[in-house]
Each structure stands twice: as C-alpha cells, then as structure tokens.
Image (cartoon, rainbow, N blue to C red):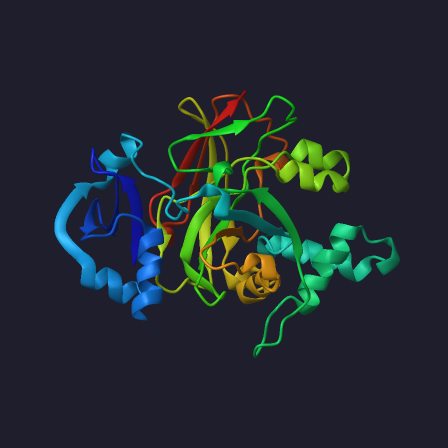
Length: 320
C-alpha cells in the first residue's frame, strides 16, 4: 500500500491512495502528517486508517506529476521541525564488488586500512540489531531541515560554492515522533541523497560540508512491509540521452547494517525524540555516477526507480 500527498486545486492539499494510474482521495485528510496524528489518537494502524478513509473520488496520477502538484510524501507544517539526516557505508553493493571488498579485507593489514574501510569492516562484523541488541553504530551525517527537502519533479539546487552535485540513490525512512517521544515510522520512500562528492574527495573531514545540500524523496510512501531484497535503477539523462545508468541493490538483505540498527543509533539521542518532529533518514547507497567518472552538468535529470516503491523519483540539477 502506497500513498501520496499533493496540491489539490484551490482547496490546499490532499492525501491519496495510489491505485494504478489513479489516486483515490482520503476523506477529510489534508496531509500525511495529520494522518500520523490520527494514528496516535486512535491507536489504529496507518493501513487500517487508509482503508477506512479512502473514498471514490480520484485524480489522474500522471497529470498530478506533470503539473508538479505532487508534494513531499511527508512534511511538517513547520519545516524547522524536520530533521534530514543519513548514514553511510551501510551497503554491500553488487555481488562482485562485495567479493572484491571481502578479498581486500582479508589480504590487508588491519593497521593499513583507511578509516572508511575500518568503518565498513565494523559494519560487516557487527552491524545488525539482533534480538533487541544493537550492533555497532554507523557513520552518521546531517543534511538540513525541511527547507532543504525537494519533491519529485522539482530542481535540486547546487550552490555557487559547490564543486559537484551528484546523485545518491537510496531508501529513506519517514518518521514522526509520537506524543510519548517514541519514533513512529510511517514507511519508506525512494531517496536521492544529493551530495558534493568532489568536496568530500579532497579530504574525508569535508564529508559534513559535502552533505549540506538539497535532497529529494518520494513521490510515494510505502506503508506496508519493506521487502528485504530490492533492485533499483539510477539514471542520468542529458536531454533525451541517457549518459549513465546502473542498477543498485538495497533492503536488509543487501546491507551490512540492518535498518533496525540504523534506526536505533539515530533515535538513541534525546534531541531526535521530540514529540511532533518529523525525521527523514537516508539509509545509504551502493552506487553513484561520480564513482564511474561521470561529470554532471546543469540541466541533467536524475531518475531513481524502485518498482516496489511506486513511481520514480525525478529531479533536475540546477547549478546556481
């Protein structure tokens, strides 16, 4: 089950259930944030509420996308109460690169490994939360507040001081903190954790700077269970020409840290458990065009798709 949030004519915003090429409007629900508050008040699940509230009124989904009416699938009424964060070195990558990585780990002197390789090895050895016991903590970074988040169909802005503006295709977890200070996960969305890879490459200590950029997630939220194995496709188009594309693997079966462990280590901090706050947390990627020597250009279009999560996430690069 997947839902979207969109601008609805002169009436403000609406939430709808995705039903093929149509979306079916939920009655008396103006935002997914309001929907989460109903969960807290009623004790019902999101799926139960959507099934109870969905009506017969429909809109053409593609028309909403073409008219740029689709909004972020979850946002806070006050964008300063949204935290956009992420984790890295969390994915195993393809079978070939995973084998290559393991071989390097086996053959290398542990004292000669880079900090990144050490972190990756720690995740391989102890990155899973099992039976309620957390594993090792991952790399973590801050992206910005809700002002930095961009819906599907809109431009990702690369600032004048940026050296690069490259895509990072991944899963994003979407959360609201309940009145008791507990994180409630609404579901998952496709994410583009847009970053400045050239800046990071100068020195790993520039990672924090490289992450302070726009990011995009959506257009839909998957409310039901996330499959353990997901295959996505990331593409860059320049006009009508595909200049780069690559499959990527995600989901728990393809990660060195499981999602439960990543959630635990983010929400263990009191400041991330303030009632009412929204959190968008990126879970890491296994591929990026920058690693393949691609130089992005102003006007390039990023398209990231994971079929189980609905329509692709599409954004255009704008260098300002």
